[in-house]
Every structure is written in structure tokens, then in C-alpha cells.
Image 1 (spheres, rainbow, N blue to C red):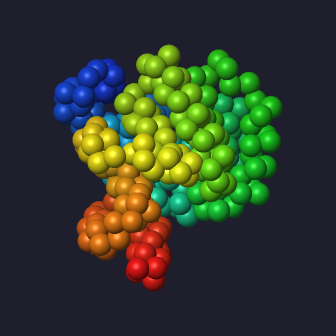
Image 2: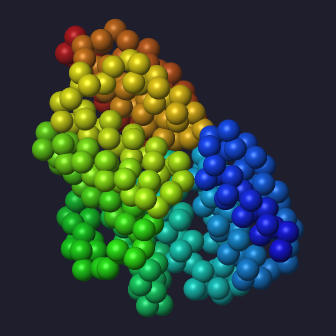
Length: 299
């Protein structure tokens, strides 16, 4: 296990370096995962398998990350390592949510939340509450999400930078869910706050790019379409090349921008391409088809 830990730590450090180091990071993470899967059952093996899954997600390889997190969940349940499950479910919720698989994300979120509550693990309870609340917002269950917001306001997160990031993401999703100009403006402000938190805590590029994508969404809600030009979209897409699901989210926003800027002729062609992509979940498919139907009806 010492060798696997060394590879994992190396992969993590490479992710903190400039973009060119991502290939080396994935190489080291893959090596760590191979060694973990060959190791004998143990709690350290389970924890490292889970952490590898989470880091693969943050490195832009969500499918591989999900595969490892599913294995870690099954193994923890089989061996009775209940204390490992809340954090594993929290990571799984975050990953599934990023892939647009909101129903599965909610299921994992509730499991993690209830387990953390039963085990009286406050850190994991807050993490699962944040991730679950975001999922509820994205599923349109705003009343349930608001209840979690009230719970989280009483928590002390100042000493936990990562949880501050997760809570900021929740605040952004709540503002975007309002679908108002004011909500969009507030979301942009919160994204700037999130980017500043990333700079202060030296967080991984995944988190910074998440805030960049949501900032664009906030600008669209705030009717700031003219601040988004083709050069900006191209630059952002290039920046997100290593993160296919974030890049897909950006392409969905670009599709909306294209429609609202009046270029209806390009919408159907762009929509068809998006529908063919592996990242397109059932939720995404419904959104794309609804937008195309609206554009077609109004043209």
C-alpha cells in the first residue's frame, strides 16, 4: 500500500501544477488505482480506493472515478466499514451530480446524510448536506433544499476551506434557480467569491473551472449576453478541454446563448451534435429538445 500511496500523492501534486502536468497526474493515479485493486481487503485500501475515485473526477475522468467509488461503496458495505461510507457517498453524490445524473445523486446524497447523522460525524454531515441540497435544487425541489440551507447557516465552516467552496456552490445554484436578473447578478458575485477562495486555498483547477462555467450561466440570467462573445466561448472551451462534463455544461449554455442572440439557424445543428455526445444524460437531452422546440415554434 505504501507504493500506491506514493503514486496517489504524486498524482495529487501534479494536479496542482500547470495544465501540462495533467497527463503525468493521470498516469500516476492509474498506477495507484491498479495497485489498490490488487491489494488485500483493509480499511486503508478502502480509503485510498475512494480517494482515487474522487481525484479521478477532479482530474476530468469522471467515469473512472465513478467506477472506483462504486467499488469502494460496495466494499465498505460488505466489510462493515460504516465510518467510511458517509464521505464515500458524499463524493459519489458530487460526481453523479456533475454528470447530470441527478436522481442517482440524490439517492446517494440521502444515504450519506443519514449515515453521517447516525454516526454523529459533523464534517461528513455538512458535506453531504451541501451536495444533497445542490442536487435537490437542480431537481427543482427548492423547499427541501431551503431546509438544508437553514441547517447549514448554523454551521461553522470558516476553518474548513473545502466546505466553504461547497457551500458557495450551493449558494450559486440557489441563486440560479430563481431564474431572475437579480439572481443571475448575485450568482456572478458568488462565482467571483468562489474564484477568490480557490486562489486563497490553492484549490485544484476543477473547482476554478466550475466557478467560471457557473459565472457564464449567471451572466445569461442577468441578461449580460453582449459580454459573451465568440472569442470568450472559444477560450473557455479550450480551458475546459480536460474536463468533458464541465465543457459539455458550457456547450449547453452556449446553445442557449446562440438561441437568445437570434441565431436560430445554428441551434438545431449544434443541438444535434450535443445529443450525440457521451456526456449527454437524460436530463440534458430533455433540456436540449425543449430548447429546440421553443426555437422552432418561435421562428
